Amino acid sequence: MLESDEAARRLGVKLGTLYSYVSRGLLRSYPSPGSRRRLFDLDDIERLARRERAGDRVPTRLATVTTSVTQLRPDGPAYRGTPATQLAGTSSFEEVAERLWGPDGRPGSTASWEAFDLPTPPLPGSFDRLRWSAVMAGASSPLRADLRPESVTRTARQLVATMVGSLPGDGPATGPIAERLAARLMGGATPPFVETVERALILMADHELATSTMAVRVAASTRADLCDAVLAGLGTIAGPLHGGASQLAYGLLVDAERDGPQRALDDTLRWQGVLPGFGHTVYLDGDPRFEVLLRGFESMATEPQRRLVADMVALAADHGIPAPNVDLALAAVAWSAGLAPDTGRTLFTVARVAGWTAHYLEELREPPLRFRARAVYAAESP
Image 1 (cartoon, helix red, strand yellow):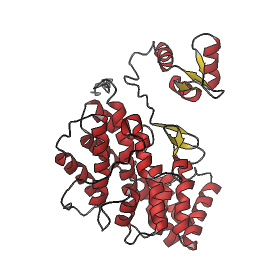
Image 2 (tube, one colour):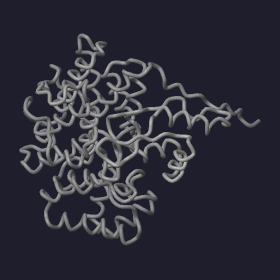
Image 3 (cartoon, helix red, strand yellow):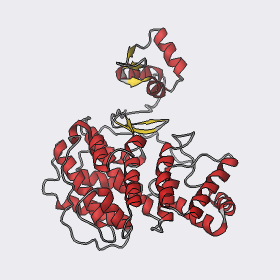
Image 4 (cartoon, rainbow, N blue to C red):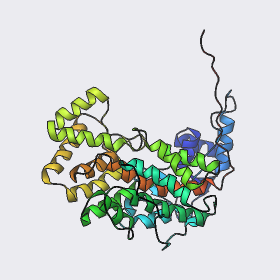
């Protein structure tokens, strides 16, 4: 069942038009238990959508992705109905991962997150090590083609632990994932930093059908194993416009510290046209994840660092630039702690394996090979 906002979005109409369809008998709505909201049957919505598109010469949508994993709302992503911003202050990353995996993921599981026994990666870069981990984890799994939910989630736990353990630096091989990752990112990680890493992992664990998640679902539709599907997601994250956005925001902070916020923002707008870490296609009034993660930055940063970020945000707002997003908060955490510029992408990548696994499990319940787009062929001009 779909809520009113989602039903209207599927049809490409306003809420008033949706309700007019109900009054005209084109749709039926149903009461939502325990609330005054109205719900709509997905099949009814899709049937009306096909009717509205009946005159199209080319099908515009060959696969509909219906998900119960994450809903994007004004208050941020909600994981199976609970806001991620709320979970970021009350849960561990492991608990959130199990929640995302849903009934197939044994919610509340106390299963251990032990890494595969692999050699030290022969690569210097963090992201290359994460990709290496996915390749080697798949090669080390004796029954990687076992797609039962319990096998998939067991592999996911091992894969996350392996990725964290592959990163440069020293750290424990057991214990909470946030503590292991914080130790790899920062030698002698402080409790505020560990808490901030936990928040970041939870907030970045999933974001509905982001580009990398679609890549994972396409791989799942071919019944690729989880490690190969994760590699599909990693290939998409490698692009600077997805997982690498926080690294661009990190550069903006470095420039602002050296040259002042006004010159840094002006130069960035001159050469890039946009400000990295500002604006979001979903959260037009501001990314709710930004404020939650920024509190972690403020707990660790010096007063000049806090003032610099506040001045940047205020200057952008004064000139009508969209509100900051979570990429700026990720960058601020790494910058204030003196960590590598790609720290934000590392946090993003490790966290997103949890969401990818949830979507992978969901896609296994769909008919295989359903993502078959058709091209509109256009001959080249002579």
